[in-house]
Image (cartoon, rainbow, N blue to C red; front, side, top):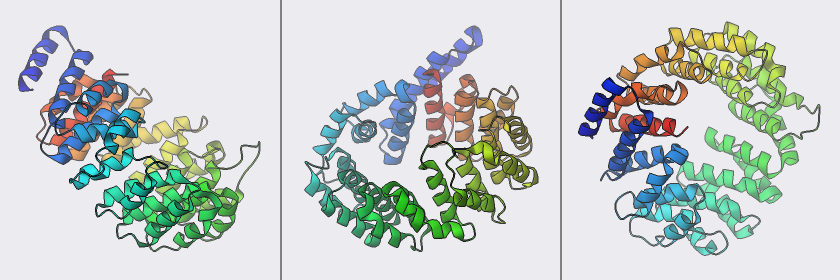
Length: 401
């Protein structure tokens, strides 16, 4: 790898940047790290290949069908993208002694043909196997046995992540699951309450409207904002339909003293069906906002509206100039994607920051959003393996555009 990078550096000095050739170097790095003996590194490399889309698919397939450590991780990535051959291969590993392999094999189980195995996986000692089984059983509706297994997991599983997955899976069971989901609205854990709101809207929107209506009638909360977002997203598309309670909840959240709640409102508004109707309220909130994270969320929401786009871009520029945090970097990345000529200059300093997470995000922003992959190549030599992987994934995906 050192020799490949040195050769590219020499070519770049004489012939200029070559994004395609640099992507081949990045692909070689990902292939090497995918064969690491460290499972976390392997998963990171495979995840970057999966995120690279069509550009990463050929290597992903080679790793999946070749013997060696990344075999199962690559099969899992392909199965998640709907590759039936990969699913069938994983199915054959369901009795493997390695709990991680056994967990991945759950992705190959069919909800009808392998119903008994999926139900058994709901009691597997490995929480990842249980979570994946819950995810698959969400496709088994209206099977009452599967629904009861998910209801039990939602109430009793010792792992919070498994419980939340089970709650979300219950959303596909319609009205039969409403009672169990209503119980989860009172769960002490916020993640379960939010999962229940989402699942209720999926299970029976009309019933959910009445059940979560009490949330909307109270002072704004995280669960209420999530309920409002889902009710708006699933509203009938008839002209002029509005959920005034949901809108009122968003306006309350925008005026909340809690910055986390204001930011959540901004995120909800970024996908609101009629974001333009909130334009003046968001602009007013943005002009008074002092929290960088909230400013970023509000500017992102305002960016979706034609009338507010200019103000949103100006707010993002101010944030990118002033903030040396992840918020400033994300603002600059949004500007780069919008074609702002100054944005790459605001992103570039983050490539040398001490925090690995900032270098990772900067690599993706420069290569993908700003379209300047050559500036990222130094990070292929980074001391942190996750930074190297992020840089390689960004280079590969940017070349595939």
